Every structure is written in C-alpha cells, then in structure tokens.
Length: 387
Image (cartoon, rainbow, N blue to C red; front, side, top):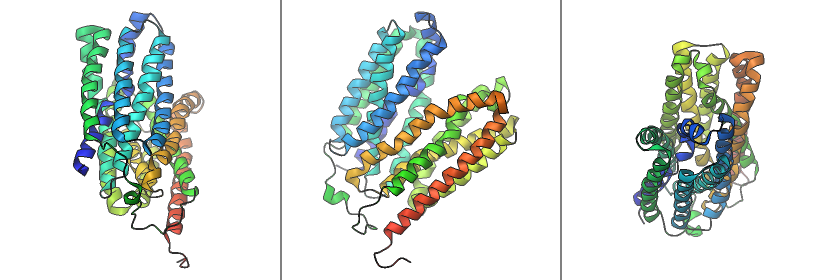
C-alpha cells in the first residue's frame, strides 16, 4: 500500500473522529429539551474527555499489534452508535454513556490509530504527523458550524442522525485506505541513528512532563478565552484565533520537525510558550491579548504535532503506539486540571497572576524538553565515544 494512500486514510480518519470537541454546540438545545443545567451537561464532556484519553492510551497499545483497518472499523462503529444514541437520549445518564463513554472512547481509538499510521512512516514523518493531527483540528472547526446549522433546521435528533451518517461514510472510506496489516517489525526497526541499544525510559518521562506542562496554559485559555480577551464582545474572536492558531501550529510544526529534528523544534516551541504567556502575565488586553491568544494556540497546536514526532525518535515503530498512548495521558491530565486550576486562582490573583504562574510552568516545561534532548543525544552517541 502506498504511503500517500495510507496517509489519506489517516487524515480522513482524524477528520471524522472530531465531534467530541464540538460538544458546546449542542448544549443549549439539550438544556431546553432535557431540562437540565449546564453543570449536568458539563459532566458529559468531562466523561468524554476521560474516555478519549483512555481510547488513545488503550488504542495506542493495541495499534502496535492490530491492523489500522480493523481499529478504524471499530472506531467507526463506536462513533456512529454513540451519535445515534445521543440522538435518542432522554437523560444526562444516557448522554454520558452514548456521547461521553462510547463516542469519546471510540474517537480516542480512531485518533490513536491515525497518529500511529503517520508516526510510523519511513520518510517525511513530521509532515505526515502534521497533516494528520491538523485534520483533527480542522474537523472540529468544520463540524461545529455545520452542526449548528443542522440544529436550527432539523433539531437535535436528526442532527445527530445526519452526523452519524456523514461521519460513518467518511470513516468507512478511511478504513479502506489505511493499511490492512501492521508494519513488519524488521522494516520498522530500520532507523538510521539506532545504536542497537534499548532506549531508556528517561526520555519518555521527560516528554510526558513536557507535553503535560506545555499544554496547560493553552488548555486553560480555551476554557477562559473571553476573560483573557478583556471584553465580552471579543469572546467569539478570541476563540476563533485560538483555534486558528491551533490549526496553523499543527500544520507548520511537522515540516519544521523534519528539517531541524524534534528536539530542536521542541526547544523553539518552549520559547514560543514563554513569549505567549508573557503579555498575559503583564495584563495585556485588546488587540495585544488577541494576538497573544493566536500565538498560544499556535504553540499548543505545534506541541500536539511535535510530541508524537519526538516519541517516534526514541522508540522503534512496533512500540510507538503504546508509548504515545502513555505520553498522551499527560495532555489528558493537563486538560482536566489546568482549566479548573486557572478558574480557581483567578478570583484571588486575577488572570494576569494565573499567567505569571504559567510562566513558571513554561520554564519547567522547557527544562523537561532540555532533559529529553540531552538523554536522546546521549543515547544516540556511539558506544565508547561520549563526545
């Protein structure tokens, strides 16, 4: 199977497993129909986030032994059933099971499968990863306005049914295009810089910390974009700029990684994070704050591409999925804690105080990147030549 065909399938797979982050589009309609408050519906998204992380963790490990095509089929079935279940849900509990558990877990499995396909190609890996993870961001950006228009025209039930049909069709095509078998280990191990020694766990731990800490400021910003923008009227623009930066960062980071290597690209990403947090720590508002949010989104999107590229630099192909799944839990932990922590601290210290704290977090994340790069460099030095 050609590399282009496999990557096309992975892009379509990631494009179609993105409905989880369009959840907010449905909340107003669900509040009216089910007569529940925002807190109850927020639990659906929280469970979905945990299930998505679990899907990536389990899916990454399974993807090392099961063909991408089989996993794409499982993800397609789970996604379609989750959407159909959401169409007929009459309670928050049903939504938690359908949208949160089933759809969240299935889309996490699909995401892990798509990233593994891109992360185990033999050349242009950074570009491949950039295209695939960008497709996930693009999928949410396209799905949200489409779902909003469908809700106005057809209501909640038919909107979920139509989304199930459309995304199910895209996922079926993706399943046909992605590889039908796992890459042969003997091919996957042909790594030009390998010394034959097993990579220690140190780089993976450092990368887990760098991903968790490096994601935290942007994840908090996604939850409090309006407050950071400074005016209520700028909320929509702030969210748009964050998401635009997220897409641009994902797309640009892959080729950068191919050109300079994951370690150097991660160092540049760490510098960008400090640069993005600084104006917010200094109480920036208006156009400066909006430009800063775009930079923060760009940094976050780039980190989402560079992390799997860095994982592929420290483990052989046959262990990529399991290792990336473990590293991805750092993002999940940051997603659960950073928005809540920022919202809890803001009444006491203000959002400028929150981002002064995030400057420290960014500095620690950069130190973790430096540790990762040093450990990888030390491991790749030939035995007997400490350099």
